[in-house]
Amino acid sequence: MKMDGRRTSTNVEDRRGKGAATAGGLGLGGILIAGLIWLLTGRAPDAQTLSGLSGEGATTTEYVPTEQEKAFELFASQILASTEDVWTAEFKKYGATYRTPTMVIFKGSVNSGCGNATSDTGPFYCSADEKLYLDLDFFNEMQQSMGIKGDFACAYVIAHEVGHHVQNLIGTLAEGHQQMAKYGKSDPRYNETSVRIELQADFFAGVWGYHENKMFGSLEDGDLEEAINAAQKIGDDYLQRQAGYRQVQSDLFTHGTSRQRMRWLKKGLQTGDLNQGDTFSIPESQL
Image: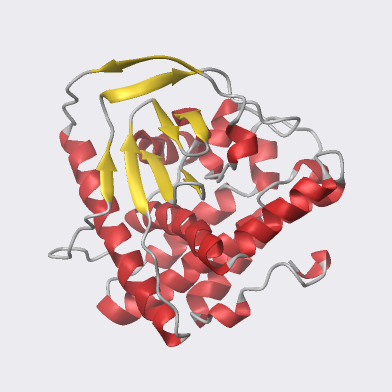
């Protein structure tokens, strides 16, 4: 991506070394495949998901970022600024006002409006405080553990979490969580609804990419392939195979298959049209 000279967001909160709580184990019901998998899924946990975490003390130290972390922080701030520009313009088309989220950069563990979380949770969005949380080490994990390369793949991760914020503003996130609460975790529709939430966030990430390139002409050869490759490698079926599952267990899916995630991201990238992102009312076979 061509990001030289682009503005950075003022909605970035750096909590590295500033009293982050040491959190206990994350309770993910029966859907936790492995810590590494959840680190790489980009899940947006809600308050119920994170309620099992408990802080066990806090420390305050002066954090000195590495040069690589400085570069990641600059890039993340520029991408967040881009999402602000794109979604402000998109909401204005519909006579609405976009309320910008805050991106919290942390190291190791963090307190959020949805509870305490560790880096193993991966990047996540909390609707209770309208903040997205990111440990910059996640970008290294993408490259080293999953072979997900490229700056646009990293941008997709941030845009996906901002996509959850867009869902929060338009109401689909709350509706999805209400449906999940009504079904209960033992009902197959619980995970199916989670998949629909995540696929819409993928679509919104694609919509952002479409308008980002239209506004700034930032995409270069290979950028789209980077994002599609990232979506493919964080599909539930792909992750299960990587974790050693002999047979894919679709009842454990919470984010969608590789095919589904690539399809909805690509649809957003190709159309840029918010009206084409309804993942909730269509049959499961069409996801």
